[in-house]
Structure formats: structure tokens, C-alpha cells
Image 1 (tube, rainbow, N blue to C red):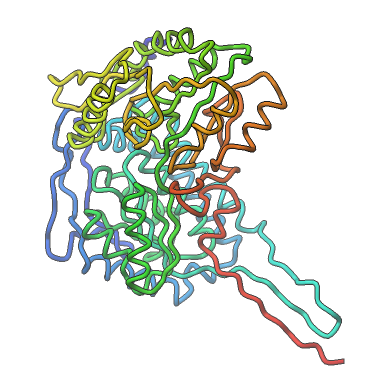
Image 2 (cartoon, rainbow, N blue to C red; image 1 turned 60 degrees about the vertical axis):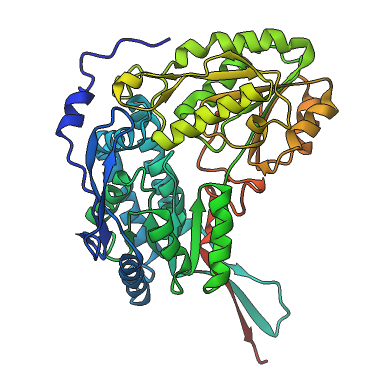
Length: 502
């Protein structure tokens, strides 16, 4: 249940009116326009207002940013600082992020449409925690001594790769950037970040905050622009050692192609998902399961790669469960993202609005039954809003069950027994996350083991932390963000074998 805003709550509309977003690139510690002066207007999906102009970076700008990053790495201004010194800088960076909470939250809300209540309570704190957690890990990672005979000493050490290209999406602009920046910077690398053209403003502000915290110039650069221009140039660049990419599977394929066409750089893709949320009839609290399904699906307008968009329910409880989930939809009716009580905001732009409405139409055409929602709303605001939508009678071969929608559309698929539930869940080209709801310990473990997914939630969905890895099987990507395992993506292992003469 929502509550009235506190008398001390910020007037977000007034703050939005006073905000002046800077869309210039950050290269070698300075704000700079695109080399050729190109720029584009950025409009807000909240109400269509113009937020400002953004540097439309291209290959020349990427060349400059990579050169700055390489120079910073080669002269050791960051990479050769003692671990404790890097730790202090990154901890200050995290503190600066928290101190700028309202500004950063407002930038993301205006940029991509998420409710301000979640930009402030989720996105900014999670970004700061990620940076701080990797800062704390810097001086707690030890290298290895291999078990050799008495005539040798074999050292296994981690070394930073060099220049990391990070290409991140628009759905969680700061968090996705932090998942790359944290381990990459903590390891001693330099970074060139390419934010989505749909959400560029918080990325460039983060770079400024990092500089204010003491990160040397050139270590963290930001080149806003379009994927086919700045993103492609970064992925093809011969002096970039690795690419950390989060986005669609379609573009992830291109990242691998670009690596093959250039210097065989490492590519780590975190891609799409079509996660299964499996409810068995022996679970004791269907109201909690239904509330979790709705909350996880409609959070962030459904624009989450791990959204549980396939709801698999046992036939014996399906009618009842669908009713419970559908009854919760009014809580998530889209509202003004700048209102502190709004639960679900705007889709990121008109293109995404058309995409989501197209999938809803496909659901109707293929014979699924729309139980609730399915319409565009708040068109008079000038923004892009779609109702929370639930389809029942969905088959696993339907388009809305196969393809990632990236919008508030939930597909209900009924199953007869455990074996069918596992088969349906795994019958997907994706394998990012899944959830099992059962009061039976044996069943919970058995099904969790059988599911081909990078994360399996049991009797919950939204519990998570920076301490555990995030990533998927199959076409959901490779490598892992978060946790200590993320260091594997941004470091090289070196063996040094010393012969010891008697």
C-alpha cells in the first residue's frame, strides 16, 4: 500500500525544472564535445521534455578516449598504485555517489522513466555499494603459489588487462555501469564507458564524481553516442583488451564478431532472459508467491533482463493463482515517475513503446487470453506508458513466451507435473534466472538442480546481493558480473616459474 509523501519529501518536479544535464563526453579528465561537434537531443520518456543535448561520439572520440586510457595504464598512475591507495580512492568515489544521490536519481528517472522512489532507494545505493564492495576487496585478494617440487617456485598472479571497454544498457544505467567499473577499476585497469544513447547523463556525472574522489585523469572515460557509431568503434578498437557488454542477444553476437574482426579481445556478454517462475501446488503461501511474481515482473516497467516473464503454474491452482496475480495489477498502474508514490513509470522511449504494444498484439493474434491490461495509457502526458499486462493460456511456442519483451507483460503457462515444468522452463534459448516455489525440500533442490539457469531462486525472487555472481547459461551470455568472480573478467593470470638450484 502506498503512503502519502512526507512533508519533507523533495519537490521532484521543481528539481527537474532546475536540472541542467551535461551530455558532453569525459575524456582524460575533461568534459569535451564530440570532435566533429555532432550532438543529439535527448527527450524524457516521462513527458517528452527536452533534457539537453548529448555529444554524439564517433570513432575519433573513441580513439581519443582509448588513447587516454592506454596512456594512463602504461604510465601506472592507477595500475601501479598500492592496493590500499586504490581502495581509498574507490571508497571516496562511493561516498561521492551517495552524496549526489538526489541528482543522480533524478537524472536516471528523467532519462529512462523509472519511478524516482526506486532511483533513490535502489539504483543509487546499489551503485555505491558495488563500488565500495570492490574497493574493500582490493587488498583482500591473494595470489597463489603452486605445489611444486623443491627445485622450483611457481607463482600464479593476477594482472590487470589494460584498457576495458564497457558498453551498458539503459534499464539500470548506473548499476550496470558499476558492475563493470567496480572490478575493472579495482583490478587496476583503465576504462572507456559507452552508455546507452537512451540514458547517457548519469554516466558522465559518475565520471566527474570519480575524478573529484581522486581517480587520476584518463582512468575512467565516458563516450556517449549511438551503438552503431561509438559502441561499434569501441568494440572494434585494436587497443581495447576486453569488452564488458550488457544488452540484447542480437548485439551480443556482434560483440563476438567485432572481436574476431579486430584483435580477438576478450568479450563478456550479459544478455537477455526469459526467466521461468514455477509455482507448485504444495507451496503454502500463494498470496506471497503471487505478490512476488507481480512485483518482480512489473518492477522497472518490466525492463529487466531477469524479469520472471514466464509464469509456470500447476494446473490444479492455475485459475486461482492467475486471479491473485491479476488482482494486484492496479498497484502497478503507470503513474508520474516524479511522484514519490508511483510504483511503475514510463517505458524508455517511443520505440520501446511500439515494441511492447506489438508483442501484446502478437499475444492476442496467437490465441492467448489477456486477463488484465494490454493498453497504452497516459498518452496525454507526452510520455510512454503501458498497463501491467497478464496473458493466460500461453503456450511455450508463442512469440510472447519465446522472445524477450522488455516490458510489463507476463505470460502464464500451465503444467501438469514436475517433469513438464522443468521441460518447459528449460525449453528456451535463454538461461538467466528462474524461481521454484515449493514447500517440499526434496522438490525444491531437485528442480533447482535441473534448471539450466545462472541463478535459481527458491521461494523468493527479488533477494540478491553484490556478493553473488550474476549471469546466465546459453544465449543469456558468458562470464559473470558481481561477486569476486567478476575479477576473472578483467585480469590475466600469469605463471612465473623460478628454478631453484641447490
